[in-house]
Length: 374
Ligand code: SF4
Ligand code: SF4
Image (cartoon, rainbow, N blue to C red):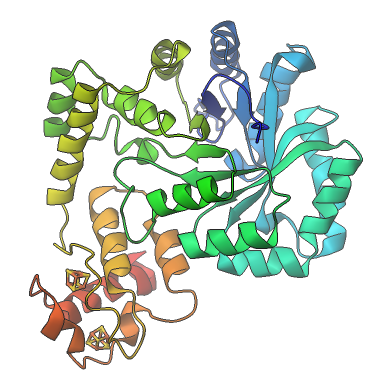
């Protein structure tokens, strides 16, 4: 199937734009970034109404839409959960987005951050039918979704909605086999359904770039890579990945990213080996040494996804500011919270790592379920 996304494989994620001290977008710097991005042959811009409280959309209008012909770029926007309550809200909301961005249509329109819970609401509000009507009217050209939940939920949505043309997933070398996020399994589901993949968070909110531990930076330097280049090229090298989004905040970041992605080449064997060494290094930083073998889960009377909750906790400890809370919520949506543990001990009897699971779950509960600690 021909991909609906055809562009150089780096997209400009407009959720962390350069800001001035007065809280406004740094228009001059953003213009320079837009200019260089387009000059180097890249065309894909991604926004959503909640980004920068609506300022991302209006900044795009000023720096991109009013300065370049419509054919020079493609623009993705999203139907966000927080922006509608009922079916009747969707159509006027999309019109406010078109007006804010100053365009007649969006090239790509995504159901934003779908998970099992949001999927129910989007279905009940007939979002899928409404957006298809808007597509038929030419207000959006291609319809997809961005996704934050487990691979089985993704499979269910794509099975129910074969009309979706592409999927945006969180995908990076640290989350690949994370049991709380399941990046690899989500990518496999997309491949099975024949959907092009848009990658978000390739550097995990900076955790795999500037904030990577010094030992990781050294390993990449020895392979002639910057941490950001390693992470973005790792994601872009996967089959079916059409574009990797990078939320760039400075001209320097944009210069670096566009330089190594201008003539994109997948990682060489030596570069891939460096990524694997860094993956192992990051794994050793985990506070809870769970190997995700899942021996413990089948016998739990409270259906607690123990390795997934431990993974959320590990992530929250290593990647400060990362959205582990959202993943904890997605993993416990239908019960199975850490605090549900009845301390029967069945899991500990079977754990090959001899982890004090009951005690650790209390720590996890304190981290994610105590309002004061979140
Ligand atoms: S001790 Fe808690 S987590 Fe372990 S099996 Fe029993 S209820 Fe489940
Ligand atoms: S049995 Fe132990 S190591 Fe395996 S998934 Fe459960 S907690 Fe993790």
